[in-house]
Image (cartoon, rainbow over all chains, first blue to last red; front, side, top):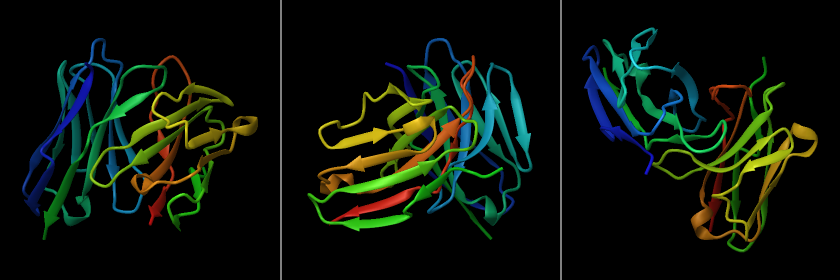
Length: 110
Length: 115
């Protein structure tokens, strides 16, 4: 069965303490992977799309990488404003349809 | 470029009542999605439209939920009658359409509380 799993569920970091979030998937024929950020009370905000293994994308303190089995969202020297829930999504099933993971709730302490 | 608009932002109703949510997608986006997000979980797809046709409604509880997208632009999602377990955030999203799966852009959501 096709699945998307994120870990850890929650992560608490000190400001400046780098770490990585994981999104693993079991999908035959990967057609891309998406990362979103969701702040409390808001809809998810698109961050990155990765289409093939080995691809990397960067934005400020965030870098997303993709292998054949998983994706990592690396956060370098995080700041309190990076606190949010980070969601990954993978195309599974029908046309233009994605399945979301349950997310990682990141808290960065000053 | 204007984002995805949704209304209302919040709604409180009693069980067995009905409620409707409205969504206006980004101009030019042919694909529109409605998701249900329960606290602590990722968004779960309820229904997907391409233009004004339904592409996927396999997870829509059709005995109580209905949705339409008239003229391929705005969409409404209705719940009748509501149950306690329908308490959630209802998110609308839109995307371009093409040979690959494109990123989705979300509205702010409607937080529904059923008492």
